[in-house]
Image (cartoon, rainbow, N blue to C red; front, side, top):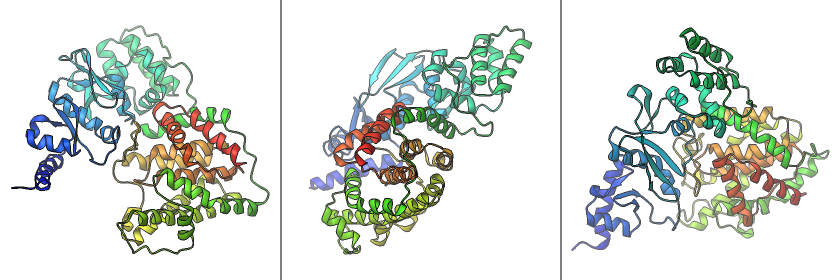
Length: 507
């Protein structure tokens, strides 16, 4: 008779076969009742709704949302196809979000289908799908994004109401900036005789500085005999100048967010005292704060460290080859890496105190910080040297967050633009707050983004003569909640206020 472990192994083999096929949403019919109940009992699958499951980790704590948020979009794509076949499409508004790279998990996903029930279907962690009984657009007006049927970008722009422009200006302006020529929307406007929509889009394009596109829309519609009244659907003028050569929605969204958020930061974070007259004294203070900073920063990331361990690895009194599977050894590796990276950050601070541009220094040096942070793991054989070669090459998800970091291709577009913003920013307060936030929003690495973001923040603090800020472990929940508000809701004020409070205590 097979042992319980052998039986579980058989069930796991079935699950692995399904996952190897790219299956994320699992139907009850995909697994026999015996295998399904065994996997559920041991935490390897999780029920989303009756008859539907997703793979999960047995060590995931109760209430943990990470596996669901990581599975959300793929699950929805599979579920909607199984329920509606080919007769469904995400709403124009949600289509705009995905076209512009906003993959944050919505509380309610709006879907159109002639088979819709006009009611919500509850999912995990307060999310749901609302299927509206509406016709779907013709095939020419739809496309697929990561397996999800969405409106094409021009069709989505026509399908969005005026209220959508005012409610979500960042996404709508990013979408407009992706349109390279008026012909992308004109065919649909003329074919449908959409004179009101034409006036709205012309006003929207003029709002972002695309005068030629706005003029072409008005001219073509009038030439076809339509009366068009131009109207700007946005509530204010864009505070960001769109380059006609920059069509990346990720970069444009980041630049717009920077322009909007910096005003809130300047209203909350204190003015910079200026570069210290005695750089040596400032560097000495940085050196003295190391132990406190290392303890709190590593503890925030879940490592178990103590003052004794921090001092041990600082002195080099450790053996990276021993006890590779021991959690205490992993803590020691993390602490040693932090010490090595801290030394490199201190060298970067010295350059900034000497008058070098903080954004340029961060751009040139952050790769070195990262390699030092995880170098001990390579020495111990836990990581491969190739793991430290650059930015991530796979998706990453943040625990308890509805924010989905940009894909690997977008990371490579965003990072040069991010450092350009730091280089051009004239206010140190903005570099401090938005430098940290935007870095962790992009999440360029598989691991270590929080530590790297705090290193970057402290380099920017030095550029304004502010003291080094330690984010204390007891404020971890406040810190993570403030970052979530900025990432998911676009509200930077809680994060700016928290850092301003910590800055006042550090003085």
